[in-house]
Image 1 (tube, protein in one colour):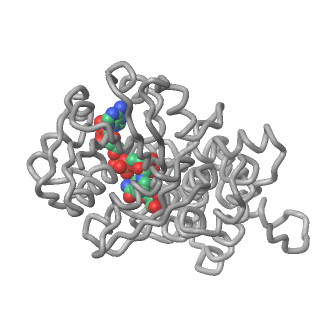
Image 2 (cartoon, protein in one colour):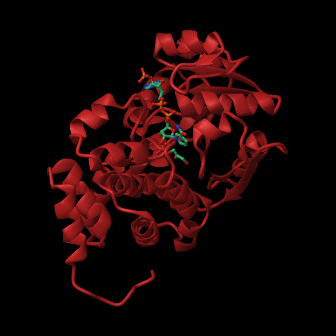
Length: 331
Ligand SMILES: NC(=O)C1=CN([C@@H]2O[C@H](COP(=O)(O)OP(=O)(O)OC[C@H]3O[C@@H](n4cnc5c(N)ncnc54)[C@H](OP(=O)(O)O)[C@@H]3O)[C@@H](O)[C@H]2O)C=CC1
Ligand SMILES: O=C(CO)COP(=O)(O)O
């Protein structure tokens, strides 16, 4: 099958390689001319590894003509704008496989809802989210990875499962809890930033284990508040993705947190990051959700104050430690 990839960053280009390995034909679209040139020369400019055999273009019409299957791999900040442009150039039904992870602050919309907003009904075929614990740095080296394809359209979830699975290094499960999978993938980035901050500040593995445990509870609350199934948070797209992102130096979110914890100003950390740090917007969206719904997310709320209100890390930690003592609530 032919598949177009929108966004040739670290994840989009890596997934193009997976699809090529699986015998499909891909075309990668990116707005960055230097990225496209480098991909056509067999080198990923951000991952700094060779990915031979990719074809890339800056021409959106060519990309939409190439295939009606579109992998959305642009940072969520640019998704709405990219979809608007895609809709203007569309000429047939399109089938979206979103691999970006985020929730839009203010509107609190998931990517599937943004697709619904921006793609005319006549051009909409189906939507699936492909998500789970997967750093591009490992997948590009064909290290074993397991993902979930979530869609309300069972046939399309199965199509995506088959497209990306292979018997060498990548296995994909399917799920019909689109909300739970999209929300888990977005909110784990918020907790991953906190994990980095704690490590950068000098806290140890005891603290990280506690963070992951209490963090999954906060993810569960957001999943449920947004209409997903609680159980989904305990699968690959929730706890699985949280574990890898909150404990790996491959994670952009963990690394950004690490530098903040070391005392580097937040703005400088974000400006200097070559790749997208989605967790900042996830923290903002989750904070907006606490205001709208009243759900309690103590870790994410204190992270919001560190990122957006200049709260020091030491004050954030003592803010968490001086909370009222209570029984351990699981759920
Ligand atoms: N990297 C990873 O391991 C994983 C990432 N993800 C998710 O995938 C998404 C993308 O992440 P990642 O690949 O790391 O991001 P990167 O920062 O590596 O790359 C994003 C790419 O998209 C390009 N871009 C920006 N806007 C547009 C647009 N309108 N149309 C086409 N291309 C555009 C950027 O160009 P420019 O350089 O000019 O900005 C850049 O080349 C994120 O939501 C992330 O959370 C999910 C799983 C794993
Ligand atoms: O979603 C990811 C891993 O599953 C990528 O996380 P980072 O953006 O933190 O690298």
